Length: 243
View 1 (tube, rainbow, N blue to C red):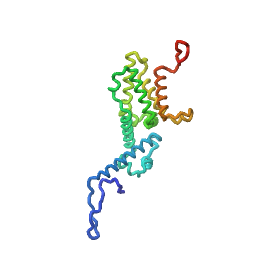
View 2 (tube, rainbow, N blue to C red):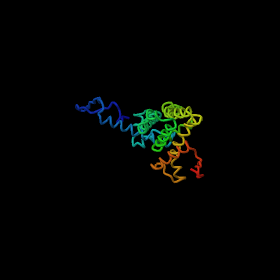
View 3 (cartoon, helix red, strand yellow):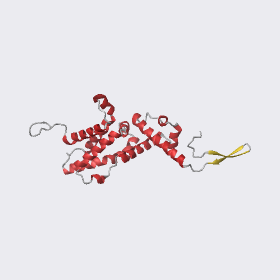
View 4 (tube, rainbow, N blue to C red):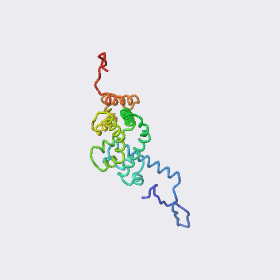
């Protein structure tokens, strides 16, 4: 079937008697190129939403195309396979998060490990609050070892966890942080933020709290920091009152 995206198209040139000559189409116009880029972006947005909601196995290229308002052939034109669009969707999602929450190590280099870790935690809480797609995709992918999990861990997660690991290690070395397993500290922090927002409907259903509200984002970030650095137990001040 000839689609609108075929690279070689037949275009009427001129008619001679009953015969129609066909000319090979040249380089696509700027309008056509922009349209192809736009359709690709719409498909990636649809794919991110679908994979976050349903997981890889339950999603079809037909569903991705339908949610983007396109034909299924467009998915195969741009990405060929479901595996390819899954990887492209993850790459797009990580680019978007990197642009919205850039982390330059130079910003943190003059801070002591505890202050640096507080910045990282608050930043991660805010990132988790504003986009839960990655967390939900990781819920689907993170429960079973497999090539997709290995790929996303090697390409993105390890380098994303690195600032936490390095900061915790530095804090342990300076005696500011307890000598706990680094992986345990890093994953406790990440899980506390990511999973809370991933299960935001549960929080609203059980406690009536809308985690998407700006006030609640700050409230949760403050609570995570307080529990993490000060502990949960109230300490009495000199006059005996708990604080």
